[in-house]
Length: 303
Image (cartoon, rainbow, N blue to C red; front, top):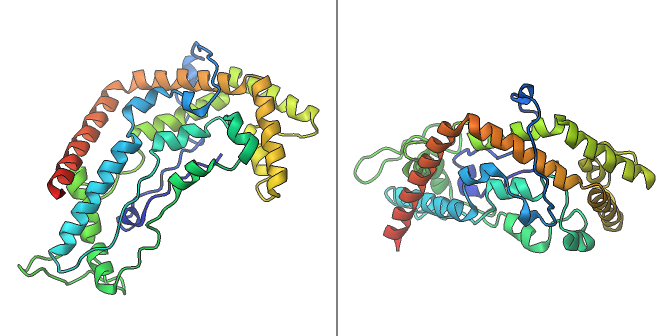
């Protein structure tokens, strides 16, 4: 189940890590026993309610923050005589990307038309329309802080100021993120998403639901252990074959309450992890809100 977070070229020049949620994270907390769950029906991906989402950045927040970063990058470049052309496009937030297919395809109306492919609106939202950034050698040097040969730039502003470390690309992030040019690794929210996923995969109730789904697929002639095995098996097949498999995959998920149970188990483990890290999460949320305040101030000043 692959979940990549595609960023624009403005993020890439600052060496920002691609967000990926991994099922390989430690399942610490499983030893405490399986938490009680409350199973509710999830008929659409919009109904997926992950407790950790309240500590994560929304798509609107991300849009404001990265727009402010872009403004700061361009302001920095202008001091060195360049009108930067790099841009940042809107994109789904981490929590939206992780939740929409976290338990496999869910939306029946979309699956009946597109199979495993995202609906056009979702696909458009994930496109990187800034991917065509084609800077001049001078702009690239100012934005990255390095020459074409990889050496530190010696360019100075009219006032004799040297380029900031990492160039104006990194400086834009430092301006908005309060001194950091890039995230210092996985955030706690990402870690909780990964840990709860690993714990869910080992939970007896989730495993029982997976076995029921697997048995349903076996009755139709397919031998799969996990839902994502079905999609992976037809990723190189024709659209018609993919569509047929997606419909069957979802049909078995609905017949076995797979999504409802996996969501309930996942939510329970997330809440346990949140309780364990409440102080850290609150501190992270404050840091994010501070970043958002700086971003809004920058954007207001640019109007």
